[in-house]
Amino acid sequence: PSMNFLEGRLSAAGAELYIEGNGFRLRVPPEKAARLRTSGSSEVVLGVRPGDILDRTSVPDANPEECLTVGVEAVEPMGNDMLVYLMLGERRLLAQMGPGSSVRAGHKLEVVISMARMHAFDRATEQALT
Image 1 (cartoon, helix red, strand yellow):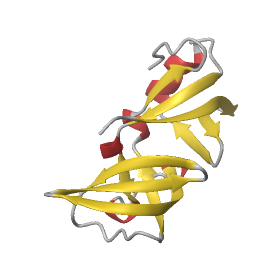
Image 2: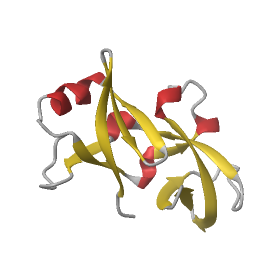
Image 3: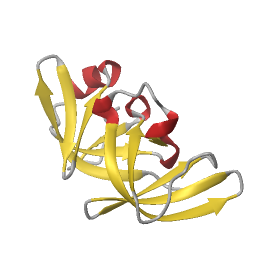
């Protein structure tokens, strides 16, 4: 499955850097934040691969600043995995989860975005920043 893209902007709070957009605010890990701070970009596109969106129940020690509550639109079993169609406001996301997830269509789900594996692009030039 292809990467999910979310438009956002960089915002700093003390030493922390965040990507904020419509319905989300996610903390950027320090190793990625350093590159983003020096990029000169503030309007970005966050790229997240489907396998990097995890069911929160499978990551009990997840950083709350990397979690989102989303709606589950549909679940499609695919052998050892499931494709899970999620809604973040009006934006559809695709997650690839293991069969152990108890995710069900029509319910809310807390997910973890693996921000250590995220990608960021300049919104105007589409140049990769991380």
